[in-house]
Image 1 (spheres, helix red, strand yellow):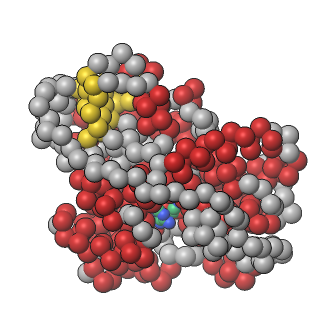
Image 2 (image 1 turned 180 degrees about the vertical axis):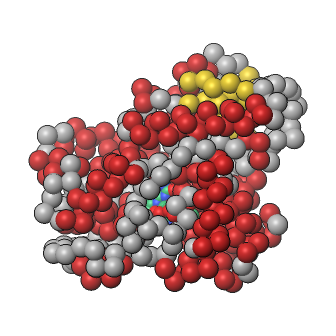
Length: 380
Ligand SMILES: Cc1cc2nc3c(=O)[nH]c(=O)nc-3n(C[C@H](O)[C@H](O)[C@H](O)COP(=O)(O)OP(=O)(O)OC[C@H]3O[C@@H](n4cnc5c(N)ncnc54)[C@H](O)[C@@H]3O)c2cc1C
């Protein structure tokens, strides 16, 4: 597996997938044939998470090849990301509570042997150990494997989901506060209350093409419980009219500004803002950090090729910013940092897709799914 940190590589990956993998996606997507055989899925999430390729771009290109009906499963998967994002935006305390709980649990588990055995891939479960190595070396796991991994972590190894979610965030190139936190909550049984995801031996054997043996799991665990209830925050995500030639600050979630809705607006300069580990609660692995920095460099190069003035700055350097527009970084560590600084004259700008879709994220995905054709129509 190889993820080069640049858009031209991502586009080539997308084109190859559309040509060779998309046709059988709905039939084969749940199979994890191993890191050397990933043609049945796109492996584009590291780029979509960073805005290098947008969800709309993915959907449009897939529709150029096949009808909506044939593409429905692929489009639904793409829209899961949008849904999780919107769901979290309407309930930002889920992220806040997650980080608070993590801090306490981390302290308690610092020396825990069971935890150390898990993160070093030394358990008695061969497939789990292999996935730990894959996560650390390739910085990616198949979706089904993420579900099995999280389920084994929580119900067989009996470790707190918060630590598992942190472990994923540290190593995944696509690490995303919404998809990851809510994915782990879902497996644990606190996202859809009372319904947990239990990995089973037959399922792992079937969908890994019998690559693993002796998979002894707790297949009967009860869902985890949480007393917390999150009510929906009313938010409108409106863009104010851009009236002044100010700088636009772009963060790690939007690294294709030249293709964004805002490209025609007049900004002084584009400032690409990195967020290093010293300002993060979850410290990212060296690979993950280097991947992000590579994507920033690539974005700068592409902007310069289009003669758009830009520079890369660390987030600590924006503390003295007086007035600027900020392309909304979404709930996560970057937004937490900005909020902690109490800037007075900054204005968030939102992507059109998010403005339009997040209004449908007040209930579950089953409900959201009904609006997918409407969302696509808006962008076609
Ligand atoms: C416990 C757990 C943690 C996860 N953590 C993350 C995370 O940190 N970041 C992340 O991007 N995804 C996360 N996912 C979702 C999913 O596993 C990945 O997005 C997917 O595996 C990416 O591989 P792909 O690009 O080949 O997907 P494909 O199957 O090719 O799908 C196309 C695109 O749709 C989106 N997508 C597909 N499935 C999902 C999904 N279930 N949720 C959200 N978006 C999806 C991705 O953008 C992906 O690139 C997590 C899932 C679980 C169960």
